Length: 103
Image (cartoon, rainbow, N blue to C red; front, side):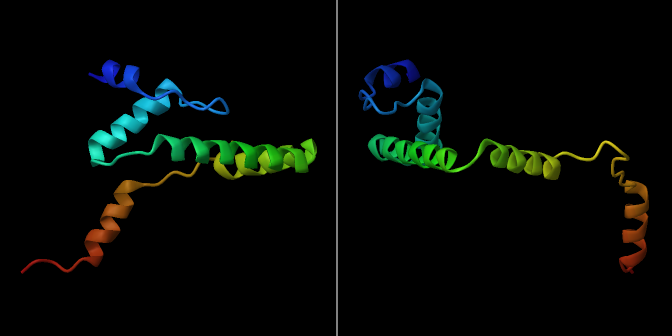
C-alpha cells in the first residue's frame, strides 16, 4: 500500500525535493493524525529554511560558527570529571518520611 502511495506522489519542484524518508514521515503523520499535508507548502518551507541557513552561513565567519558549535556542545555534553550520580534510595526514603502515613 505504501509503495502504491509513493509511486502516485506528485513530482517535486526542481529547487528541492521530498526524500523518501520525508515522504514516509508525512504519510505517517497523515495516517496517525488524520491530517492532510500540503506537499507544495512543505517544499516551500523547506526551500525557505535552506535559504535562511545559507544566508546565516554567509554572514558569519568560520571561527565564530566554530565557537558557537563548541559552546553548544559543551552545554550538552557532561564534563568528563565526575558524573552526577543520583541515589534513588535516599530520594525514596526522604519522600516516604515527608508523606503523611495512612490511617
